[in-house]
Image (cartoon, rainbow, N blue to C red):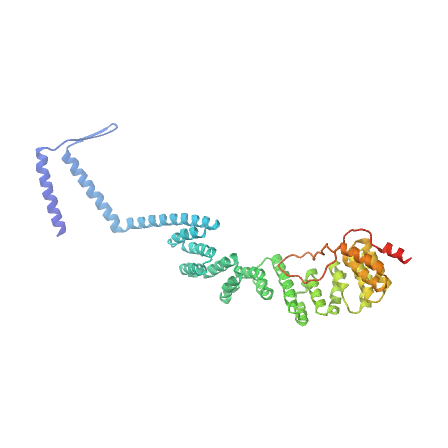
Length: 430
């Protein structure tokens, strides 16, 4: 019916135009460069009308077939992605500059794009954490997980990494530990957990994790051995704080054999056992390790043992064949000889040590011996010289990491100094 009415109206309009066109058809001339078109106005109007109808019909045909909407939709999508990428890039720049609020606003706008939403929400979570708003941070993480539920593991790792980066290692550990058992064995999860346990100095947890790390090859071999060394070194000192010699022995025996040959671990273990009154129990460990590889620190600790002094002194003298000029060994032998009541032998060893290098502790030991032998003047001279060197603090052994609190025992520090007082002592005796 509408088509009939439209046709009638068009015919009436055409009749009216035809009446007027018969009276005066008009004249139109179009000129372009060398081209000139001359025609009547009526013919030009009819041509324009026909052209409009054809264009309209073609447009309607494109809409009916769905070709135009699809193309327009794709164009809008590409345009939206381009705008979103620009917003994401700007938001990330703001994020790197620490402009948390500005970054969050840009990233939330970017999240309107479905393709970019997961990345945008993750970055927005970091911006929220930067402002200290943990609830909003977790909300953004949940939104990202809703957008890509199949990537929940990656998003959980990202959440833990954000927490760790902003000084929340315990939160990060709790986040990772909520993962299912199969995901908990992921290499990235294990690597991140190892770093978090290290940062929080949770040595028992790190030692417990080592088996999973090794089984799943989460760390390169060199890095694994470094982590293992650090974990057991920390565990030795952690157990030692509880002053339980039996637990410390159990920890020692549970360690891999190669770690029980490491100088820093033996040093911490032996120092702790000496504090617990179990010095004699570590003599064999120290003796065997020193025979395999020389160590001034371990030699020094050997001199603090209070077991069978005669045997310890005899063993120590065997090292003089190769290390007769070592001041630390001579100090150790002087101490052992003193405990064995070999006063003159002890005096000779201590004086020889001072001839090689001055040390406040050696002066102190020699002064104590001289005071016991009723030689107060010479003892006071040793004390005076020792006090002059007390400002020099003994260095700890060089270790691979400062994360572990080392067991504390004084370490000797020998340095060239003024001649020792043994010449004056001998003169005074004469």
